[in-house]
Image 1 (spheres, one colour):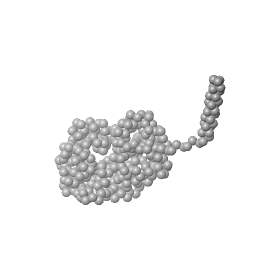
Image 2 (spheres, helix red, strand yellow):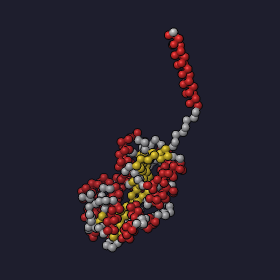
Image 3 (tube, helix red, strand yellow):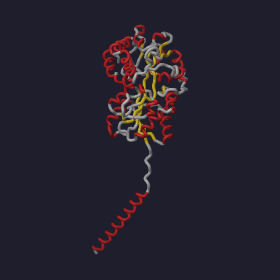
Image 4 (cartoon, one colour):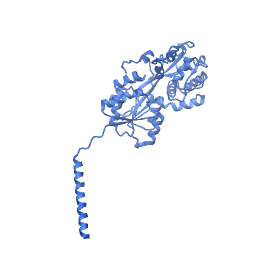
Length: 359
């Protein structure tokens, strides 16, 4: 009786094994579905208007974008913490300070692309290496001077150097000196003037302040329009928002202020930069390269200008943005310093700011 029971168990096991083998053979004959192409994007560009850029790329290539949004410092910290386990394929950052920091921290992979190198001028990408560039500028914003047309003469504020002139005592408004927009400008000034003259210039800025540094660039523009400040340093991106606005308040601000592209007779206007890089541990490097190439296409570059109030890095494109046209279109002299050099100067500049009491 026991023997019969064992025979029945063995027969059942052999039957189950045969079914399993058959199922495995059947599965092996079914072709595996191709993995959906994806791109993992870590972005410090928090603009709703950029959604069109991403959706257009997906429609054109079939590559779905998974996005992580954070500020620049948060993205750099996350990349360092994740190390080789990071999912990031492409990194988008705003300003030279952040791009330089990512380069120094070895968070980017070199990219060799004749298409990108042709589109992006040498001073708007990382210094060339045999294996390629580590990041590429994608759009720029000018560091402008706005002034109260009722109180200030344009010729008294047509250069960054003149902002330290004693004639402007008690009239200058500016955001924190440690903000990357200002650190980049100050790093550029150190390259032009040398360390000693730059520190003297920063002392002059502190002496001319109408109030302690506070707020963002829009606050500086409003301070000039209200009469609290006579002159201010601002990013063109913020000014363009006001110039494109139809609200009575913004129209009144635009009427009150004058705008200067500084240093047109000398070194040119300083440009803040937004750029992109392939992550060092990118899991989809081919998709990452396709995305960077897309961002320097005429379609994407025109969108940076017309949709987001930035100047394209690719030359020769027609701009339809009324605010950029009102500020002079693209017909101004821009600074040609390598962004990498500007970034490298910022540690010394920060030390100067501490010494002169520029908060």
